[in-house]
Image 1 (cartoon, rainbow, N blue to C red):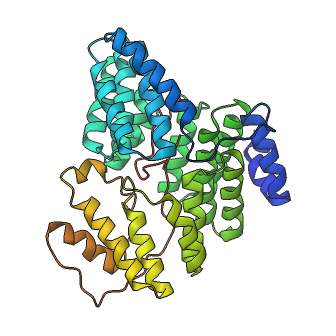
Image 2: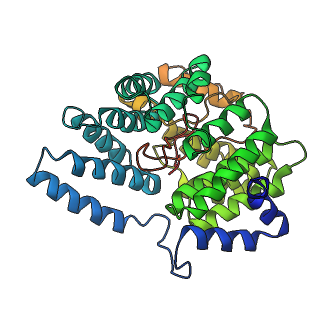
Image 3: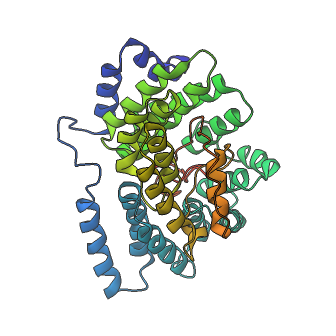
Length: 380
């Protein structure tokens, strides 16, 4: 077990290429096959069109609806199109009166709510799922995530004891709990072991890529670990799933933190979408640092256009929760309520933003999206 826990870290220390090759072969049989472009949703879209056609013929078929929920969430990870997560929510709600596994259905709905940062709704759905089936690992996992996101830490600790030790849903949450407690070495080794298990289980590449990006964030926070090791893990995530948004954002954050503004700009720009408006603010800061105030103001206007939208609360997968926003950005957020941001404030963001997986509790080893990431960005 100890050897397995250090497998990923050891491969990084020996050289990034070996790890990328090992992980991609483990996760993707026939690794020599060329992967689709990061924004290519054609295969998933064809699958969605097929199942939507079947559902139109048989509207009460909850199994088809469940397949569609998983596929819409999978496509959302790639395209970051908010229409996909809304359709997933509608389908997840529609099957509740139809399924026999009510606990699993509530877990799935809770995972969709977490993706949208509707934490109260996710917590309620997870509680209902656990009430129907106290042993449902997916529902317990979503309950843990929603409890952490909503500040119910005693509930989260109690829920962790009900997850089955040794299984992936438990390991992910145990690593999260250890990181919350500041025990970064323990969190790293727990998640490292989980990444090894995912690689051996030949899961979807997005799942393994998510695990590696989360591992990189923990690695960055460990004493003496530093940026190179974290950057190496982000690169390995991109080797497993080219174009994976959370890994690109992680590298962009590293460039931002060291003041490499042009690299940060080139990395942030392709992944900035309305689903993640905080990236518009990042780009505004980058362009202002480069000396391009017009571009900075354009991105600030894009942020405000999203933030002031009627459904901004549901749309804003703003993953800056728990982090200290720059002064200028705090004023821009207040501008949602009609205030005018001060021209004098030019604060710069610091630190690494958590980036999540998006996943289905019943299809991804009990994994739900991390509440502190909206993720693509967790995810999965």
